[in-house]
Amino acid sequence: MRVDGCCLCGYIKYIAEVDVETTSICHCSDCQVNSGTAFGFVVGVMDNQFELQTGKLSIYIKIAESGSKRELGFCGKCGTRIFARPLKGEAGFFGLRAGTALQRNLLKPRRQAWKRSALEWTSKIETDLNYEKNPN
Image 1 (tube, rainbow, N blue to C red):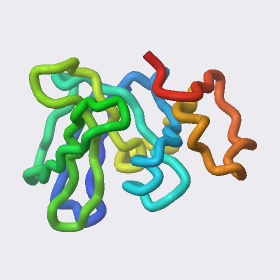
Image 2: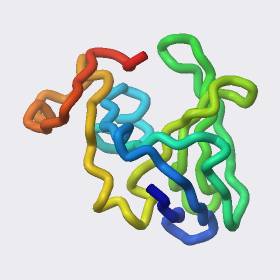
Image 3: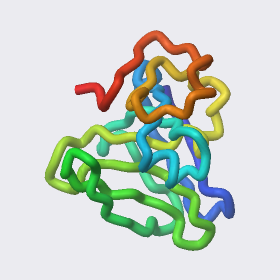
Image 4: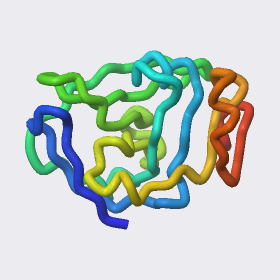
């Protein structure tokens, strides 16, 4: 599915071809802290199917619980997080922040990851697939 999206201030704009079957809720502690809420809401996209239209992303390198390093791409002006992906040279599939897509109402979560870190009240959220940790 083709989506277009932007950051809160409009400096960053992108288009992407996303895989709606990968639309996910992530309960890991990194997503909780980074989103400022109970979970992250992401949809999968390949590097070659994501195109930055305007702006320049700021990058923060985060070391995950697994030890792998990930790039967190965000708007340096308003702070909106756009994606998290493996460092360059690794796998090209990454998580686009679904809330930044203008078509976000069409992106229904299909699965949940890191359920073991989920806040108790989120147990009422229903998806087709649920994982205690990161799905491999």
